[in-house]
Amino acid sequence: MTSHSDPRALGAFLRARRAQLDPRECGLPETDSVRRVAGLRREEVARLAAISVDYYTRLEQGRVRASAPVLTALARALRLDEDQQRYLYRVAGRADTRPSRRRPVQRVRPAMRRLLDQLPHVPALVLGKRLDILAWNAAATALYTDFAAVPGARRNYLRLMFLDPQIRDLHREWAHDARDAVAALRMEAAADTDDPDLARLVGDLTIQDTDFRTWWAQQHVNSATHGTKNYRHPLVGDLTLDCDTWSGGDGSGQRLMVLTAEPGSPSHDALRILTSWTAKPAAPEAARDRSV
Image (cartoon, rainbow, N blue to C red):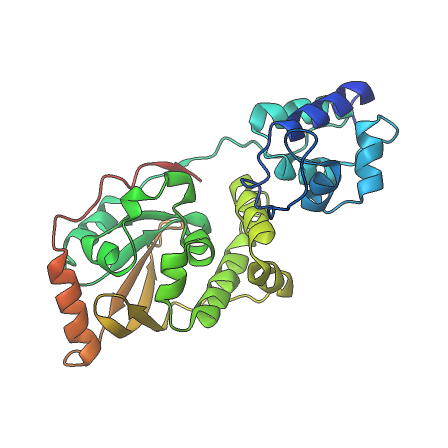
């Protein structure tokens, strides 16, 4: 705890910040009721932060002190940047014990990029921490989507699995594949429980998708490195592909995910046709550096 708190400043900051937020960008459903003020209502902030409306109201009115866990929840709900979070802790009179948010940049290893270049007819992705999509080849673009058109901050395998309708519809067994992906993220989360980007990803998906919220709460874990995925592609129809993932083994957390079909199978022929239509140089430059 710090030596000074300013309840009035905290309340003013909370009110100002929620007024700046767009309810749709926070994943809140649209309602027919007319909003009398800009931004989020008190009850909406309380719901996003998983605290009671009465407690949040008293925080804005300066009648109660916020605990460190509540401040963390409010920072996520109000989408505060690093400077705003530091200010929040300061006016709340709490010591900011969060670990430093300056983290190494994820860079695609040269060997991983060479592998992508040498797999023209096999969809392949380089996944980083939190299942961020760091790089991909042309075959992966043909199968999934144009990753280069996806904003870097949203280029995450799990985020796309849940929130991109095109990728969601691509999976013939979406619930099975999505649940496995959630379990894989849960397994990875144990290695870095203080990762703010992981907290942001989980918070966003928890708000925006009921299935994610349910499966994340179940705390299933999965470290499988191989399996089978069934797709229904709008151009070539059904595909059954083996999915194998190899770790870089260098501590970077990077993994190469490769999808292949049994030679001579209908899926193999369909995959060759699909990738031949979109053949172009791999190693997209859109896989820019991203913060871990």
